[in-house]
Image (cartoon, rainbow, N blue to C red):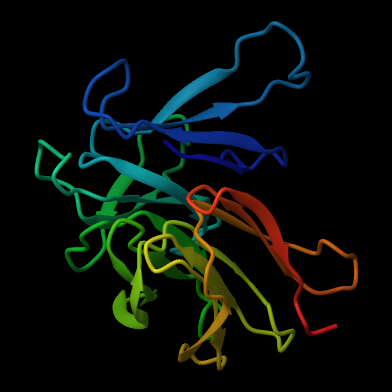
Length: 247
């Protein structure tokens, strides 16, 4: 269901991560990473390693990556929406997988606190500026966004009313040196960004009040030095970018 680029094995090259959101098939309820060969254009098959071995049930959605426990290894985050389509009844969670000494072996799963109907997006980021990676997450088939504070994983609300924030990106949107977040909620039909005060308290700003999307990116589209919002508007049937007014 999800694909992500990250250097999983620490060799200085990007690898690919992917997860199966389904309970059947070759890799049921699992997630893998693929070691990209030196020349990815050859016919050589990429080596594949299962890091979440049948311990990601409940219709898993999107991936994130970062060193969450400060041991120098890349850990991986994942969310599962659950809901009526989840016949296992084991979804509605956010979790992270702790990398061991050998990244080719399955990682250790840590489920984060709470039950989260519609959990989809999960991204590591240092929200409060303490040097540790926290986690920002959205319930793309549910309501609202939250962040988890490392190391106790205390839950803090970012937004409690946006419906189906099925996309999430993080970055310094207002140029003040801390991490903000951006989403587009397809049932609320609102694109919004969330201003961080540097300590983890967020203020919601509406970018557009008639925009729906399944995916979003923060990109400096006009090369003026700030981050703009690039949106794939599935329900609104458009691909559009919103210019950051900072510059």
